[in-house]
Image 1: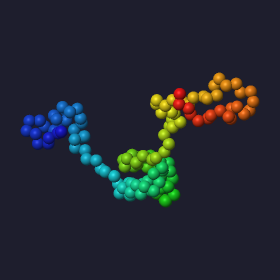
Image 2 (image 1 turned 30 degrees about the horizontal axis):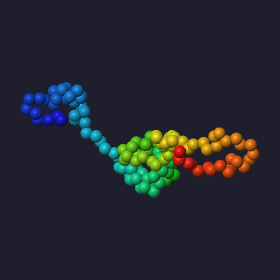
Image 3 (image 1 turned 180 degrees about the vertical axis):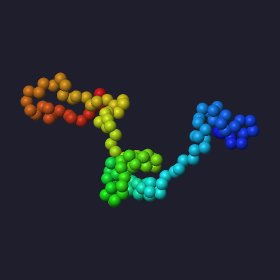
Image 4 (image 1 turned 90 degrees about the vertical axis):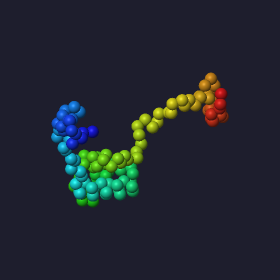
Length: 127
C-alpha cells in the first residue's frame, strides 16, 4: 500500500493521503511472549480433551496446574486461537420457523368421567 522508495511521494505524504499516522507505517508488532505461547499450547491440548471448557473453566484448570493466569488473559489467548467452547445456545426451546403446533385432540369433547380422556387417540392425526 505504501511504497518506501516511491520516486514522487515520500512516506510522510503517502501516510497523509491514506489518513494514517506515520508511526503506524513503521510499527512492527512484538508478537507473543514465550510464556503465552506455552499457555496457548496447553490451551490447545486441554481444549482437544474438553471442548466444553470456556474461559472460566480453563482459567480454573491452569490455576490448579500452578500457572498464574487470569480470565482476561485466557480469554484473549482463546480469541487469538479462535477457540469457541461447545455449549447450549440461548432460545433452544423455541420452535423452528414454519413448524405447526400439535392439534388439541380433546377440543369439543365433554369429559364427564375419567376414562374418555385416556381412551382418545393421543398421536398426531393429519388433518
